[in-house]
Image 1 (cartoon, rainbow, N blue to C red):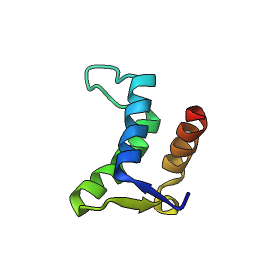
Image 2 (spheres, rainbow, N blue to C red):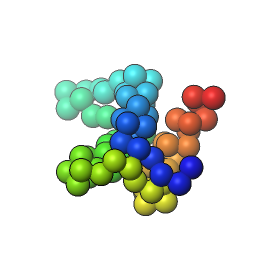
Image 3 (spheres, rainbow, N blue to C red):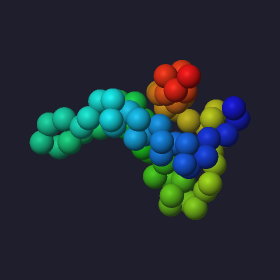
Image 4 (tube, helix red, strand yellow):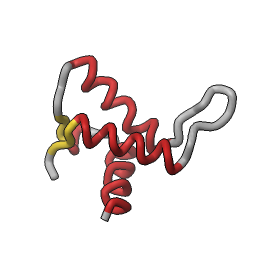
Length: 72
């Protein structure tokens, strides 16, 4: 997979949020959701519909790969 659509990225973030809910008074996201939230926000701000996988940070790529693995 070379690109991730904004819908797929949102689904991955929601998966991680359900798997590991926010904690503490600040309601901090789990590391996986947090790493995917930044590119998601940038996509929204830039009106992008997809993003190259290799443009994600290492932690975001790892969260994405683990999400895909758990979906199969």
